[in-house]
Image 1 (cartoon, rainbow, N blue to C red):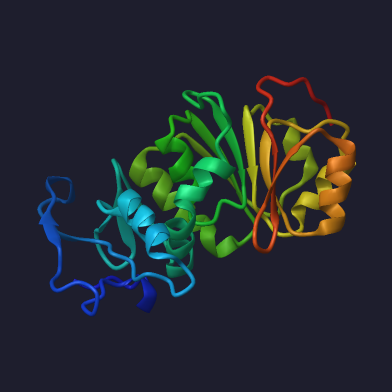
Image 2: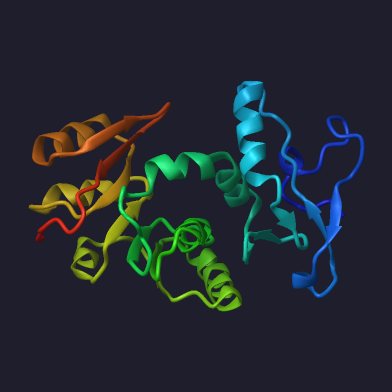
Length: 231
């Protein structure tokens, strides 16, 4: 079985001499296949091997779903590519230094639920998933039901009033919506992907944050647990 994860994500016979497959009792004895990703040309062999070390046991269940740990998630090719490329980085970008066990995460830019998967895999008790693309809401719902996640789905753009909800940590990756954070007086515990130098400079001026520079953007973090903040 070759999954639809797009050419760069299929099992490559030019790099591996044979298919690696297994039988999984969790899939009602359906045939599943390990997902082995071709090395991107701009990656070193070491970086590629580090990603393989993380994802070696990810399994394609069918043309749209992948098993990662105890969860099975439906993903489009774009979001699987994002998941595969960034899962290791998310541990540095999107996790606070304290435990998320039983905590609630506000996930802005939820996609298909790939970051919800990340947070539930790290012990989160609930995820509030905000996704502006209406075509992804059914995918989020199916992943929620299939995995019995405690998840609230908000199909629509981020609004700063959502910061009034009860949550312990926020991840934000929605191009442009980070500008709304310039209108609040205190920043919640969060990790925010920032796409504009102007917004980055304003956030640094207004709040005490940690900045992780990336190739095309910045990850801005406020990692103070239980910080007191208000809109």
